Structures are given as structure tokens and as C-alpha cells.
Image (cartoon, rainbow over all chains, first blue to last red; front, side, top):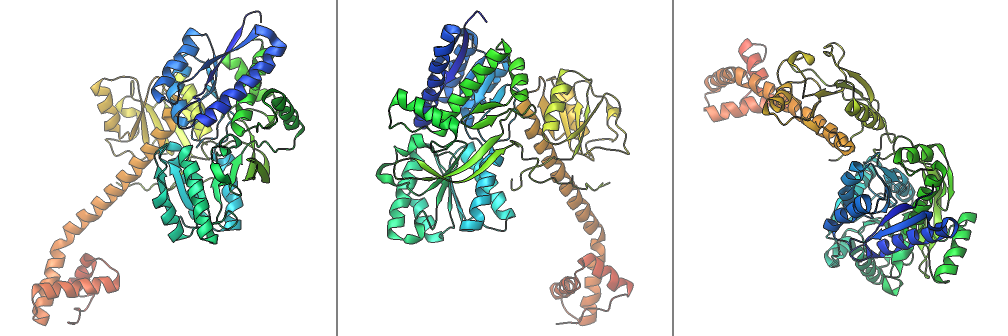
Length: 378
Length: 193
């Protein structure tokens, strides 16, 4: 292609989930810098930043799709933001590259999903936790669809396994008053805590639970772990005093992964950002999405979404997340599952892994059930 | 919602002329685990699928093999028109949810879940109504049995009613059934407590 292909990068670098947005943007920018080193100006990023204001996402997406001429947008962190821009992406027949873990129940033709859905994070997580820690968890979550749906599904899975939910509480985004929840957890004494809070709420909760564990050893990370599905390296620095050490989180990528691809990426990231920089799932996933997108555009000789989709489902690409292929029906990537334990130096020690799991966004394969025999009532 | 809806292995019928909408609808339904058929002809009453999606823009009365809103299967209306007559037609056939045309992929699963929920709820209400109607119909039997117990034991109506109710609870039968047995002589009068 003689002309410049533009890829839109849509992340909020400030706001409730700004730490994740900054890492996503960094990952995308880093991938772009590497691409431009090879391709020169044949590829170009267009960065937009809605600063966590949901009402600005649409304007940002419109700028990318209509004014800047992008057909591909990498980004959005929350489901709220994804749903906000999707109608416009559909209208322009573009492709949104969504790379965050989410609650599933979506399979849009105009999205490439490289973030994990529940059969790739929550289900293997509970498979691991229930036999080891017990079947009586306590659920906390952010008061929006991610928290609600993750906890709804967790409840269903725990009850199906013969367990019970000892409590379920929600906090508004950015709310840090966690005392009442902590008091309830102290009193009910769960087997573990599933933490679907995000950002500052999550950090405040982890700090307060650390204080509780100092008063009562029932609540140490060994006895009653706090388990998250989206806590990554990029946020650990925000939780002071090492309060989160020993707690668990799932991801499709951890900085400590020992693969050749990851060692290579780490070396290059260190050259660019210095030795202290840890790569998070957000960084690695944004990096991977940009590379995958650009690679497909180059291989197809066009940025036409239909051609790109066909290429991605026919080809397996080697990435830091492992070999990646996009399912032609669900448009989701098969992804590995890793469970990490937070270390004293703001990293994760990987304690369990599963090879790439095919995405099942509507959970149709978990159990096949016959349709109910509907009685005719005359 | 306690249980995640799962349509794996279900049969869905799309009653709509084959076009871009049916193509995308079929794709989305297959993704959800459905076996899908598409036709633009009346549906056979003898082989109903598990769920039906019908074109409410152009659908006619004999397209669906039932009369009125008591649809024997969950029904979803595919609707582009805003004409009140077309909305009324969809409701008149017993549709429990609408998918607007042009169709957004994200509209399909919620509409199916809602149509199924509405269908289940309507069935339960209908069944309860039939049950209550039956009881109202048999209410004179209860009254007659109470009168007999009052006369036999020389007790007031409240105590006689209590005796009949205790008896029906012990026998795990409805009061109407016990009353009918007593009046028919198949059941001795309950003993006074």
C-alpha cells in the first residue's frame, strides 16, 4: 500500500481507571514505534483521550472514524465505553480491537476481542479456588455491569458446586469508604473474597483487608485470599505499603511469563522505559492488538475489516499472549489462563496456568441443557 | 436472574423473507447454540420449534398456527415499522419481545431471554388462573360440606370450616376434593377435635 494506514488509539489516561488507560496507551504507542521503525510512515497512530468521561467517547470515536479516516480502533477499557462507541463503529463498518477482560455476552462482527471472557477467566479461577479454599466466598464489585455480571455468574457457579455466597456488596466507581464491607467480611468469615472492584475502590479495599489481617490471622492472604480478575502490574504501584502482597489475580499475561516471546518483549521494553518498568496485561494486550491489527493489514494489503477478519481466523500469530487465532464465529481470541500471586516487588508469581481456552462468550458450552418441555395449556 | 440462559441445542424458526437481516440473525442464533430454520410460509402446528422469530412488518394472521395471543412457544417480533397496527399484530400473536430492524447483533440475545421469560411467566399465570377458576367453580361443594359438618357435630361455621381444612391438609388434597368426597359419601365426616 502506498498510502498511510491510520489506526485509532482510544484510551482514557485520567479518571477512575486512568492507570489502566495509561498502560494501554503506552502499549499501543510502543507497538506503533516498533512498527514505524520498519514501515516508516506507512502506518500512523491517531491518539484520542476522553479522560474517563463517558460522554466524550462518542466524539473521540467520531473523530477517528469520520475525520481521521481510521477503520480500526484499538482501545476502550470498560464495557460501558465499548458499548458507547460500538454503534458508530458498526455504522462506519470499522473494527474495534477490544483487549480487556470483560463479562462476556457479546459477539459483534465489528469487534475483535483479544480480552478474556468468563470461560477464560472466572470459570477456571473458581475451578482452582473452590477445592483449595472452600465454597463460601464473599463477593465485592464495582457498581456497574462488570461487577454485577461477574458476581452474578460467580454466585451461579458457586451454588452449582454446592457452595454458598456469604455476602455481596457494591461500591460506586472511585468510592473508597470500605469500612462497612470490611466489618461484614470480618463477621461472616468467608473462604475467600472475589474482588471485582476497580481502581481506587479496589486499592482502598486491599489496604483495609491488610489491616484486618493484622488484627485477625484468619484474613491473611494464605487463609482468605482476595482474588481479582483484572488487577495488573500497572496498578500495584498505586497500592501503598505492599498491602496486596500475597493476593491473587488472573490474567492472560503476566510480566513474569517465561516464554521466549516475553523475554524478548521485556528486553525491548527495558531499553525504552528503563529496568523498573513492569509490563502489565493491559500493556501487553494493547501492544498485541496493535501488532495483530497492523500485521493483518500488511498481509491483506488492505485495512478492509472483512478481509482482516477472514485473515485473522485463518492464521495463527505468535504473540506474547501465546499463538493467537480469532474464532470466525465469535470473533474472540483463544487465550491462556494464568493465576498470579502478588510479590513484594510489585510483580506476580504465576501459580497456575491453562493453555489457550476457546472463548465461549455466551457460555453455551458450559452445559448443554434440553429445552424445557413446555406443556400445552388449552 | 439466577441461572445463565443457555439455548444450546434449541430449535429456532425464522419466519421472514431471506435477506440481510435473516442472514445476520441466523449467524447470531447459531452462535448462541440454536439450530436454525428459515422460511416465509406458514408454520406447521405439529412440529413447532422451541422459539419463533417472526417478521411483524409483513406477517399475516395464518402465518402462525395458533389463534390469539396465547402463543404455545416464545415469540419474538422482528419489526422495522412503527405503525400501531403492526405493533398490535405482534402483540396479538403473543410476541414477548421485539427486535428492531435494521437489526443490531446486540439486540438478539436480550430479546430471546426476555421472550422466553415472558412466555414462562404467562404460562404460569395461565395455569394459576385455571386452577383458581376450578376452585371457584367447586366452591359450592365446600359450602355444602361445611353445612353437613356443622349439623353433624353441632358446631359453628368457623369450626366446621377448620375441621374440613385440617382434614384436607392431612390428606394432602384440596378442600374442594375432600368436600366432594364427603358429599359423595366416599369419605366419613371428619371427627370433631
